[in-house]
Length: 353
Image 1 (spheres, rainbow, N blue to C red):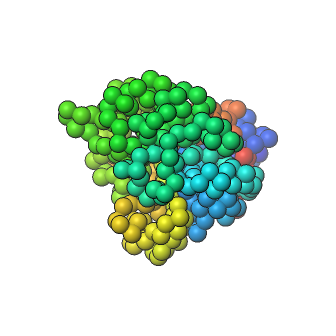
Image 2: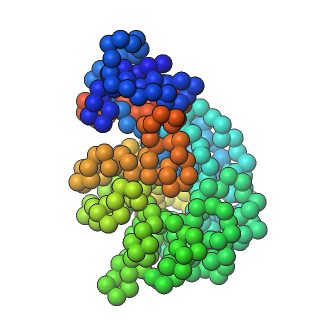
Image 3: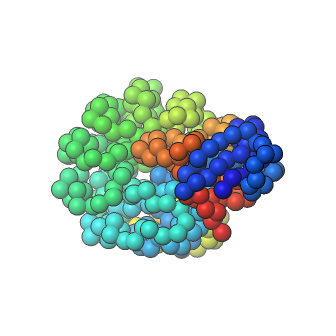
């Protein structure tokens, strides 16, 4: 298959797809036949490394067909279904669920809790919070990312030995503790500024440690979790190579206001904002594509906003075949119209209906 006359990085381009991969990228030519895409531009498919659910379903349900279909239609071509602070049995059920379903590729799981700080639990269920447990974690196949609070007992050994990408989050750790965790191997902050201490000029906390050590930072750029000026602060401090846009979407995404279950608790969604009964923000109701467009509306260059939801998260989680338009990469593509809205979605060389 040849996609012809696509606008790619400012130039009219033909992209050849073979066996689900990008086989060639060349200037548009009238000498070859293919599918005419005149008027459309192309970007990589989005990679969401932190999302809980959508259209009435949650990762903890272990049912991915509907979620993967919705995410695909909305531009997310790869994701890490993210678990909640729950019992070992509930989390293990997720890892044993069927993930080979049509639509968005599941690249593994992100375990957000239960190894977190009660004080900064946010919408997580405090009844299941516990200290890091290597033996337990090793019984959970497919955990590509894990979020922990590094001040908990056993955290340093866990970071060194768990074998997954470790993110610092839902934490009350100070700067020194975070530096120690990063030196042990932690390489990202989970939803930066949310569920952690902020920056103080004499107590820089997790964010100061992340900046000093130049690790990755996740950011929910839906316009609710972070003020636009904070999104720009993170972008200017960490750059598009280290800042990752996430959705942190929950089961109300794609639906309307109402009461929803989230991590075993009732969540009220009003005017698109999800909160626990005591008022804490509980994930988002935004798609990753909406978060990309929001970041661009805040002043982040569109190309950089796209990178922070494609190549950068793919690089961070160790998926070099995703999030880029290069020969040899997976043919996961978004074709955009003149208004930069999604026109068509390709996953693995096939257009998704």
